[in-house]
Length: 305
Image (cartoon, rainbow, N blue to C red; front, side, top):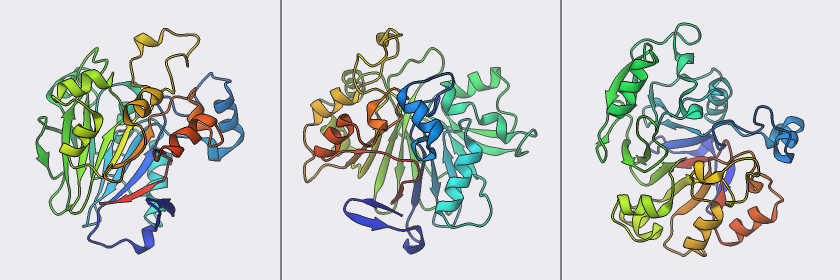
């Protein structure tokens, strides 16, 4: 159970005609705690399980009870258990389709777990762009899957009777190989944008011929937006050149957005790097975000569409 939009949403009370989306991970690819790190966030997560965050991922339950996964990272075991718990299931539910946004480590390093070494899938539908499929084939990573090539802007039902549609939306990102997409989940009543990674707002908005974030979100008729919140600001990583790791910082995004308006969608930041102060619920940075009406996403949050 959680509070969202000033109301309580409980998995027990959801209508069978609603699409149920569970956030299964809200951290950047390495998760929190991150391997080899002794920062305050990581040490707190080692000592307190409530501070832990899985790499970004979400699960979607169709009206027919089918389960569809977006992203496949290294924490699949914990994430499938979390999803099953949220849906009040006694057994661990396995996905019936998988979709991926791009090929960076934390979004695909769980693909091998669908193979014979772990879950022993064969012919599991994997929704992916043509470029990304070609690279996965070269890596010999698709043996458990039946790849379904998806074009940008094409709305499709991942399975017959699921009651919702997905849509891949091209966004600029560090595409050393392959390409990157956001994914829209179109339910019968509401829609949700899953946008864990992109480079800069200027480039993304130009890609879609929009001037502002609000204009873009309004045109897409978004109700909930899970957006890239990797870093708080450009000074965050003292041991790396951050221009080589482009992401729009939360500081930049809230400056562009200002305070939440009555017609704005619910915007939640996720894909948090282990260094990001908003991962700490008591930080002044997180309190600033929330004071403007925006949110920091948490593992296990549930949305109904």
